[in-house]
Each structure stands twice: as C-alpha cells, then as structure tokens.
Amino acid sequence: MNIKIVLVQTWHPGNIGAAARAMKNMGLHQLVLVNPVDFPSDEAYNRAGKATDVLDNALVVRSLAEAISDCQWVVATSARDRSIRLPAFSAETCGKQAVVEQASAPVAIVFGRERMGLHNDDIQQCHAQVNIDANPEYPVLNLSQAVQLISYEIFKANQTTPPASREEEAYPLQEDLERFYQHLDEALHSIGFLKPAQPGQTMDHLRALFRRARPSSKELKLLRGVLSAAESAAKPDSRSDK
Figure 1 (spheres, one colour):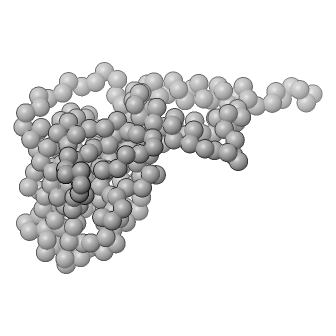
Figure 2 (cartoon, rainbow, N blue to C red; figure 1 turned 120 degrees about the vertical axis):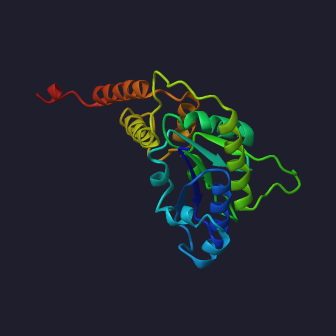
Figure 3 (cartoon, helix red, strand yellow; figure 1 turned 30 degrees about the vertical axis):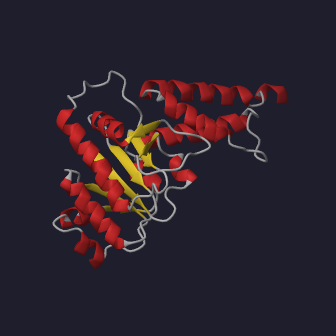
C-alpha cells in the first residue's frame, strides 16, 4: 500500500522498533522518521522483531514538510482539540479513507512526539485529524500502540474496500499546496489585506478553509492565476511616472 507512517522527533528508539513491528504486522512498510533523537539504534532493532527490514528502509528527514511533500492526503494523530480544527476522522473511517486515497497518490499518517504530540505548526500541514477512542480519563496511548491501532484499521479496510475509480480531477500534492499557501500569503500582503505587524491567524484560517475544500490540481492553478492577477493590479502603474 502507498501509505507512509511518519514519526516526528521520536525520543525513545524502542518506540521506533515497536512501531516498525506494528506496521509489518499489518502490511505497511514505508516508515519515515523526522529528526529522530536516537536512530539508528540497537534498541530499535531489538524491539522490531522480524521487521528489521522496515528499519533498514526507513527514510530519515529533517522536517515534516520534506516527509509529506509528495503526499496527496496527510492525517495528523492527535487527542487534543485545536483552536482551528481539522476535519476529524475516527480510526476506522481514517483507515477506509486512507485506502481510497492511496490508490492515486501517497498518503501519510503522522504521529507526534511521545511527550507532547504534534505541534500546531505540524497540524497546519495536515489535511485531517484522526482521534483514537479511549478512556476520557486517560486517553494517552503509547506511540507504538497508536501506530498498531491505525495500521490495523488500514489493514482491515484494505480487505473490504473496493478499488476506487480514478478521479477525473486529481488532487494536488502537499508540496503544490504549500507553494499555493506561500503565493496566497504574498498576494494578500501585496494588496494590503495582511499587515506584517499584525499577521494574526488569518493565514491559518485560510489554510483550514482550503483543506476542507480540497481544490483539484486544475482549480489550484486557477486560484494561483487569480492571485497573480491581483498582484499585478496592486502594483503602481509604471505609466504614472512618465
């Protein structure tokens, strides 16, 4: 399956090994590590059992943006509510949607740090959030347990979800969306809508809006054309200097 498990700044190497074992149990093999504190490590390999091949092939990168740049759908695992909420999925519905999405482009499921989870700037790079149902008095799962549960739902969905027909309009990859967000930020500053001294959360809200809308690649190009036209219109007319 074309699904990545992305671990962000994992502190304990044993959790990396246990996560690799959980993945292989459920037929997943693409492990991406964002700035792991201790890897490669004997402890990781000891905890991996017979999933050492997953560790051998793990991709180590410096940023979440690098890990997910080629992905079409990115899901954050988080037990906390955010001020700017993402579309929320249960573990079961996340598994089903991931299987559908991966038919056309890579999917990433992102897991945060053992002690503090994902930061808000990590969440802002994701399309949706998955919540694992647990005792509300103590809903915090060990990292490898969370990977096991999500991987199981993906495995289960892959056995029952019929092959998806190819979308007529493909969705953009994450790197294309990030370029659009950067262009949007620049255009809104150039027309005076955003003020450098008072940025607020405007861009965060706009990013959330486009995550919900999920424009196609063709629609994203159209939107960038609108932004370019707005930037051109905002420039002083060179003829006024003559």
